[in-house]
Image (tube, rainbow over all chains, first blue to last red; front, side, top):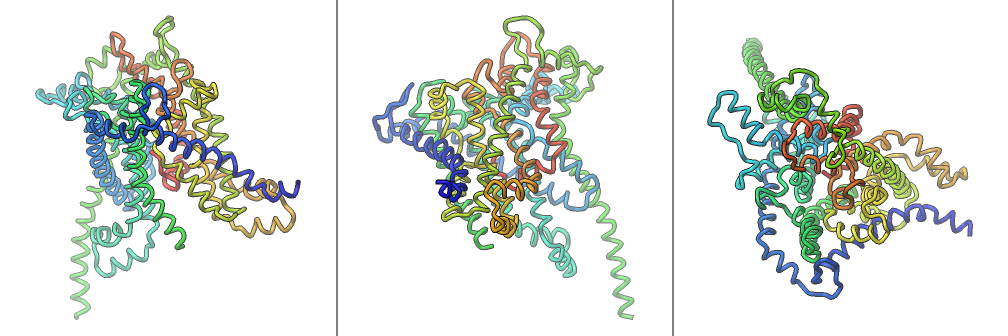
Length: 291
Length: 301
């Protein structure tokens, strides 16, 4: 008995983690998947109903707007975060004075919650007392900046706040990547007459492929899950113009008693994340095994 | 002769590149400082707004300096105005968050350390699959588990309670803490463990005598990561708690959204700073470890 215990101790110690994740992650996802195939309203029902919820979902105008917003947000969020992140990383890599201070400033938004920063941005972007008023007081009398309350433009305020929060993170990833490149490579290129621009554009950035890949995956992941920022900044408004899948899901589940529909929307999000993550994990594992 | 020619043209080139270099340097600093002001701008606006009176806010601009150090809105945000109904303030929710964060960080770190230890030093058949199994938990969109979690918390009788939130944050922290410890322990030479085993040291003795003493950096990284994630969480807090058991982020959001007759932006900003200050302090004091957590295991936003 004692011997058995001693032999299996490592597995016993592992058990809580495996059990908890098995139940609370895999079990729960499967439950949600099952419920998405039922006609559940306020309470879950367990008779199968086929793909009805998915048909309802993709016929819903609100869901289509959510998906549309997500695509626009993801595209802009990716482009701006990666471009700003790379510029900052390359510039910081030039033996800059006070690099530590600048790095701290670029990255501190990551330490704050989206609710805190959303509150701040909401105040800054509000047309009556915020940026708009600032410019009018400075003498630009016709200056208007009402994106926050403008149906067409409100989604871009979420991009502004989202990029502000996450660009520093991309900077940190690329800076770490650039610093891990051997000095010899850069020196050799310079001896061959390559300018600084060529060194980065032709040699260093192409070497950063894995970092691009990681940033891409993490940013897409953040954007699919984005919820807090929208709640704090626009609550999906004006109207439903800035709603997104995560917001759609919680509203359907907890405010509108559409349990089946919300499960279907959650599964769509799950599949979107899986489509990005599984190739990523696969390539990471292959890289690790190749080592 | 030829040598001479070469060197003079080289000097010319050197001279020219010196000027372009200087211009580039200035440009470099200009861009870096421009971005720094973009990043610092909201924080600056938050701080100055929280120190102004509503009168000053209406008359000045976002950037204008407050007339003095006026911490009234901070006092209101933290402790309320002292009248009964409808007076929401952050103090009780701040303590809720503390009561939630401390045990959740402790348990998830402990479980992660143990799991990481087994996965690297007591390897068994199929252990890399177990790691992958756990790792996938880092990536799931939490919307896919919200509905069953709400029902489970209800069945356990801990919905809308701090205990419930501790459970949720512990469970969904495990994939991250495991990842951190596993990646750290992988680089600890296995020979040390093997030698100790030959000397007759058992499972826990090896952990406490060999691994724990060298684990300080990764414990700091994990604790900071978990603290920041849990303190800043809004999705779980707003879904599984309301009213008196709410953590601070939920209370902040409710305060800002509550539409009283007059919007007090100064109190809003003071509240936001109070809700953000604990993680900000940790970041400033231990930024190195925070960044290491972000870049090494970074998967979550």
